[in-house]
Image (cartoon, rainbow, N blue to C red; front, side, top):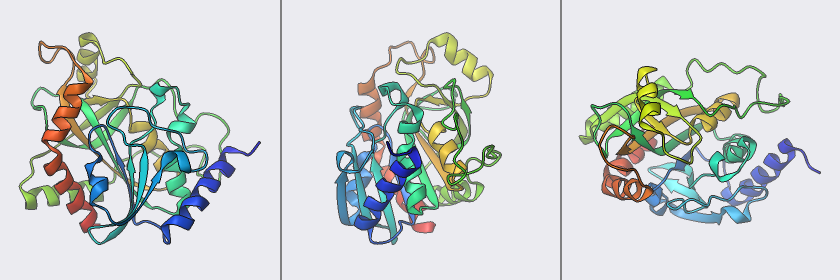
Length: 273
């Protein structure tokens, strides 16, 4: 049986043959945010099921395909959908795509997600740059034997989210008239939405938004020395903020409503890299 490193390397070699060159940036698209993939030119679309060892994404709003091509003057790898821990994937599998991007030679990753708003100054549809995260998954994708070919045993997470790229996102937002918030992202594994009591706890410990992804991917990307920018679309207010139930349909509807601004922010940021 092949090792995890060998499986990552096999997937990377498969994509190297398709890409022609190392992408300048990889972009992971969260729930309802997949339209950016259709804007890639000279595109080569690869279903996740075609990539060796790559886990499927079975959540509504995640297309489950990798698009290689050009966007805003850069060579890009756009991941339309991600695998989630709550789907039953071990974190080694849920972060497999980031490992492959790193092994392919990608140095910069943009992670996007749909998140619940905890900060009461946010409105549904707000866009937020993640300045830092609180990992409440109860586990970590680096648990287990460390393969030094990926990175060090104890990676530093002081600057998990690149100051340079956060400043670039702010510059793009200012130029394009996009209102952009900053905040702390709390990562819980789901799949149930949080209770009002849990949201009060998260607010107390400093979280501005909550979601079910991104933190494990960031940990793995930083383990491999990749620069990370993460953007949340606040698609709903978290439990107890408003007196109404939560549902995934609202997430999709809000993402669709703000997609033009979100795409403009992503494209401007990619262009400025």
